[in-house]
Length: 191
Image 1 (cartoon, rainbow, N blue to C red):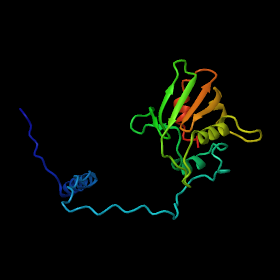
Image 2: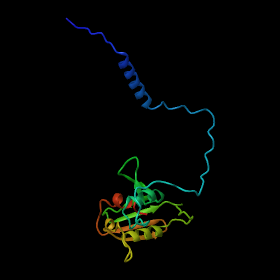
Image 3: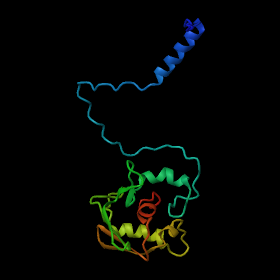
Image 4: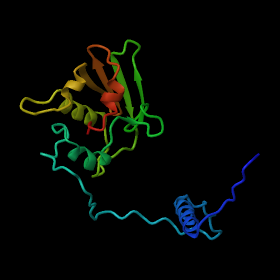
């Protein structure tokens, strides 16, 4: 013998279920809209100047990124600076070129050579050269006496930095370092 129970909902149960279903439906993503056949307006020209206002949860002790270790400095400033390499946003932890258009590592792991992209300029229009990159890394790795470098220890394996031509930077290491590309040259702190 099978028992059959009639399915019955009270008005309150029906209204509660309907409200829940409508709530879930309203949270679902909308179907992509079809592009209009009209021509899209021309892109606006960039406007130079003005102010960028944002919130940072900490006041950095100084604005020297080579000395400071606080995210209060990294978060507001790192997006405005380039590094030799950066992490691939689509395939972390792989790296892609930022200032470097190509790079190579010697078979013994002691020489890292970077070829800089052509046409990179500073904010004032001055072209970036390999000498500029060498000066930056010298401040990080071999700071003058009395100058603090919070990331000096990270580059301890580096023995020397050279600029054989205006677009090539060469790092010579004392010993191989497996983390040099990722923890070293792709670090957002290298500016």
